[in-house]
Amino acid sequence: MTDLDITALRERIEQRREAMVADLVSYASLETPSDDVDLLARGLEWIEHWLGRTVGPPAERRVHVVEGFGDTVTLEYPSPGGSTEWVSALCHYDTVWSEGTLAEWPVTIDGDHMTGPGVFDMKSGLIQLGHAMAASDALGLPRPGVRLLLNGDEEIGSLASRPAIEAEVSRGGAVLVFESAAEGAVKTARKGVGIFEVETFGVEVHAGLHPRSGASAVDEMARIILQLHGAADIDAGTSLNVGIVQGGTRTNVRAGHARASVDVRVTSADEVARVEAVFAALAPHDPLARVEVTGGWNRPPMERTEATAALYGRAAAVADSLGFELREVSVGGASDGNFAAALGCAVLDGVGGVGGGAHARHEWISLGGMVERTEFVAALFVELAQGSPAA
Ligand SMILES: [Zn+2]
Image 1 (cartoon, rainbow, N blue to C red):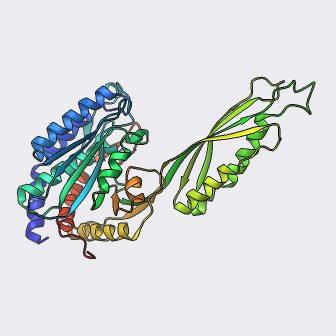
Image 2: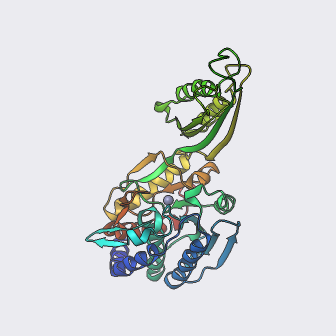
Image 3: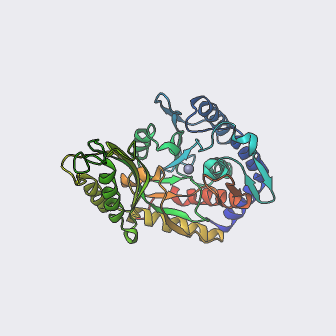
């Protein structure tokens, strides 16, 4: 990008600052909890109208419908300048906030801070993307085709949207995830997440009269918990947390049943295999007892592959040309970027809002950060429209 282009881009986005803030206030003033299909439909309708006004009509629209979940919509905006490059932009429109949250916690602006349900995770990301595309197209800057994916079930694991996400990112090109930044940094690695349920079954007898007979499900579970926690390797990035345990009925009965829920986080495919083997090997200590394992992996780990490192390098150079440093981090939480990375895509995650407090009652974004990252995305498009230097 020439200095002239950068100046023009800055001016344009600075002019649009108030409009961006107003757009985010409107969007965040619509509640879109993952489990409310009607509210999700209303939110999606607002988004598509807004995109139509801001960016223009998409050349293609594909919908993936699964009953009981918000629709997954893909909108294609081909390059106006004829670039044959494409990027996939992932934006979930659901939030963790239930209907009625806005009544107690309305969207509020105080100086550079905006707070409200979902402003950080991740409604600001979509607003920034839309305005970046609009500015880029208005100024005639090069940009790749943008395949924008909107899904409404990310906060509950993307069970319904996963096939659509995988199919869309497989069409090719870099994947930009408009989740919020981590203290300003993009995310080039994320842990994989598994939720496992372990059940133990014993044989109930009177604990006082027959202490040697029967079998205790609670005793089995206690041994299993030690085994699972022992399998963690925090240095390797692997954690296992038995967060919930239930079992037994009476103090004087050897327990017939116990249940534990386990959150597992891993950073590599090797650790996925090792942890799977740990669960597969769980066996009862007492031959009269039984162990059952259900559940499994929700998202595979997003590893920092060479392709992702190269994409980050290009993005960092773009940020540098705009005068700020773009750091990268590896985080424990998962996103839809994990699915794309597992398919071999180059993934840059955390391209969205700058602020803090995801999933917390005080989540907030910086309005200055919104302007800066919108400029950044438009400038990144200029870089990505040129294709990968290796290709
Ligand atoms: Zn999110």
